Figure 1 (cartoon, rainbow, N blue to C red):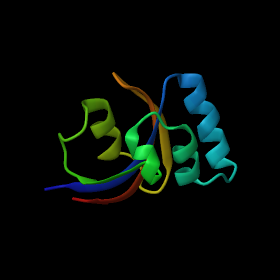
Figure 2 (figure 1 turned 30 degrees about the horizontal axis):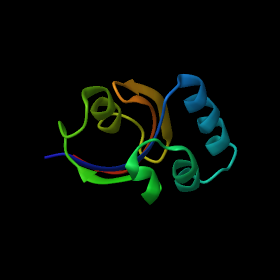
Figure 3 (figure 1 turned 90 degrees about the vertical axis):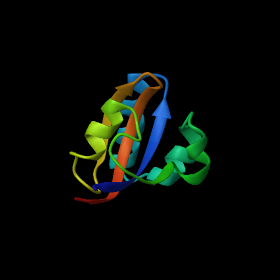
Figure 4 (figure 1 turned 60 degrees about the vertical axis):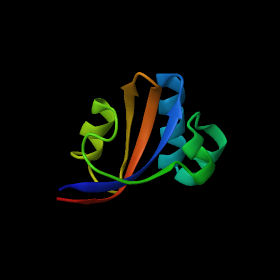
Length: 93
């Protein structure tokens, strides 16, 4: 079964998500940005979600994690929780 390891940053607005993505693409550390801005409790761990399989996250999040490019910051991804930036750190088939 496929497995992935990912981190994310959860914010309330798409505009905030886009602004944070720009900061990271300009060289800011993903983990530090997560600690300072994420609304999710995982922000305390730099946004790390650990390892999980398909179906363990909400569908929109799952789709990105299991199809997106590993090592690239992806998003904004909208879910019922808000807007996410997602960093896939590993994925196995």
